[in-house]
Each structure stands twice: as C-alpha cells, then as structure tokens.
Image 1 (cartoon, rainbow, N blue to C red):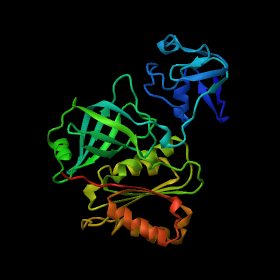
Image 2 (image 1 turned 60 degrees about the horizontal axis):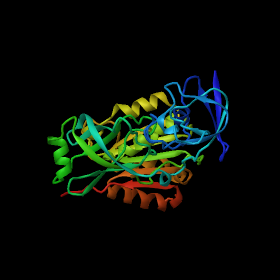
Image 3 (image 1 turned 60 degrees about the vertical axis):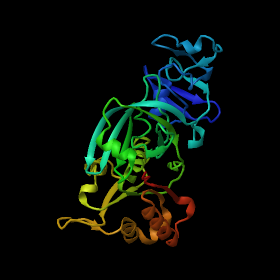
Image 4 (image 1 turned 90 degrees about the vertical axis):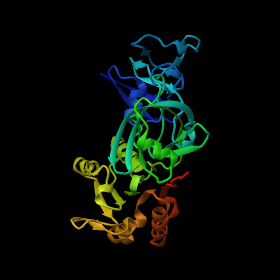
Length: 334
C-alpha cells in the first residue's frame, strides 16, 4: 500500500511507500524538502499537516511536544492516508543555508599518486543537505579556508565524499597526504556554491571535467541518474596521462547501465599504449559536437586554464552564456 503526499503551495505530488517516511520518499523522488538531521532532533523539516493522518513508528518526536497540533516532522512521519503538507520546497542552492559543523574522517583512499579520496561523517544528529555540484570549505585552525567539491550525490548523504589533489607547497594537502589519519576531526562550512544542474531544461547535457573537476561532475551525473533524467548525457574527462583517470571504471559502469550516457576520456600527454582520444579535452568536444553545441546544457569543472579555454571556444561556437555552467578550481599553495 502507498499514499500520496501533496505540497500545498506548489501542488507537487509524490508517492510514499508503506512504512516509508515522507522525507525519505521526497529524497528518493527528487522533491526538495528542507531537512537537517533526518532523525527528528533538529526540527529543520517541520511542516504543517493540512490534510490527512500520519504516524510516528518510533514514538512522537520531542520537537512536537510544544509545537502546534497540526505540526508534522516529515523525517519521522509515515502517512496512514493521503496527505497535504504546508512546507517550503527548495529549488535553488541559495535556499539552503550553509552550516558550520564538525566532521570525522572515516576512510582515506589513495586513488592515484596525487589524488586522495576522503570520506567524512557528520555528527550522528546531523546530515548535510546540499545540491549536486556544490562544495564545502574546510576551516583551518588559523581561520584560513580550503574549498573542495562534494563528490557524492545528495541522496547518498550519510557520508561526504571528497577528491583532493596534492598541491606542491600546499600545507593542507601535504598534511592530508602524509599525516591525516582516520578518526581525525575537522571543521567545515557547507554547502556552498551555485554550480548546479538546470533540471527544468529539456536540452541534452554535456559534462567536461579536468582532473579532480570530475568530483562535482560525478555528483551531478549520479544525481541525474537517481532523479530519472533521461536526456542524453556525455562526459568528457581530460587528464594528463592514463594513470590520472583515478576512477576509470566508474564512468564505464555508468555507460553500461544507462543507454543515455556516453563517456570519452581525453589524455593531453598519452602513453604509447593509449588507444583513445588525445589532446586538449575541449578540442575533442569541438571536434565531436561542432555546430550542435548550442543545443546542449554544458557543465564544466577543472583547472582555470581548461575552463577558460573551453568557455571561450564554446561561446565562439554560438553556445549561449546561459547554457554554460562552470566551476573553476583555484589550487591554493601556502
């Protein structure tokens, strides 16, 4: 058995499966309801129950004790009838307020000689709500900040995934590669940035990543799959040599699982054994798509020279500025 939930202000409706919470169902179906902890403690998701009935299988949350009688906590509420809620939906990154929180390093993967993947866990009573493509800031002890894109999609929010490239002379990345241990506690501010998908568009999607610019692109692509976006998607990932494709099998798995996705790796300094595309990644895009480029929504992330060169070339080919979305990585050295 399932029930329908309707958002009063927008008329959006979604289905909630038997014994599924309203918030879990909303996240599963890409409905942007606000949340914080997802366990009933913070009250960030508090809504008004306009019509219908809900239960709280784990007991009524403390946040409802002093709340109005028609208050509802979607993160804990399970519908017992069709429901109408008065709650504010989130459509843009500006509608998610950044928070400062501690995180624990729970896993460190060395993916390449100069790339490490960190898995960070927020406190038990908190989750990080964000949109695919956003980033976080590490707040260092001396007040300086270091920004890194979030690599996991929003629906997989138990941990935060980062891809960090080692920067020569960078105190933070030197420490991350040589001294950081699991169980280390760090402080972050997140989410930040406006590099997000235009989900109201019907145009095909072109993703251009350079190096660890793959991180936010990964978040966006995995979110698009989860949201059921069926528009054609192409990913061009440009790196120096084959070893710099630090997650080479993942885009290939996406390609096998989704008929609407294509992957093209491009090496600027290929090994002799390399059988694929060589040169600059934006030049491979121009060669393949040419005059068809103005029909695409284009998402670019990577080093500033790559993003700048690609932007100029795409504008010259007639791509409207409004269809170009980009995140330029400035690597900080101390």
